[in-house]
Image: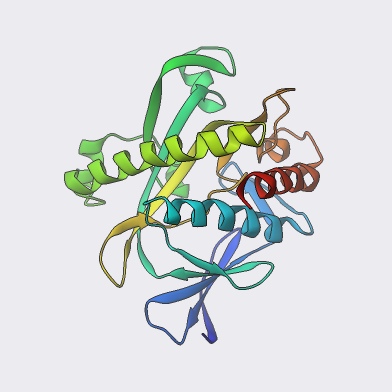
Length: 239
């Protein structure tokens, strides 16, 4: 595998071509953004932490019947991934109501509900990633109803698989954002982005302390320390 030219640069990751047409290299940057790039900062070591945490979780999903873009980790900040056609949607799974959802619904932060809530968002920074429904997604040509069914079912399965893993690590999976794409080699709908403290709300089960990007959003400090704690706990329960 040979690393090629930079083909995409986002706020927090770079994507490089390889000498294989259906494989790319993701490089995690030491940058974090919030509120659609309104708030931005650099934390040395964060890229490596996101890379390692996501590698553990995506590898676990691959081994448990959920296809992801992840192939293997190839460096402290890099992983080899399957090339995908991006589907500009976010499927958000909520085990508790927190963040903007709590504000929209008028309930306390951390509200416990009996069911699992699954939201759909249009991944569009200019529109502030608005909530949309299935009919909107189909009308915009973003996905078919069959593909949306598959994405919803996969998101629920991912939640069912990862909640116990985090629980073993003493961490509550409050919610998570999952992105999907069409694999260039097979056309299959697969998970196409990281799963990490940047895309999940993670609370310490014993103390309720936040261990995710909310530490940056809410100016709680100790971002790298908290991500390191998540990584070390996950290593203990997955190795």
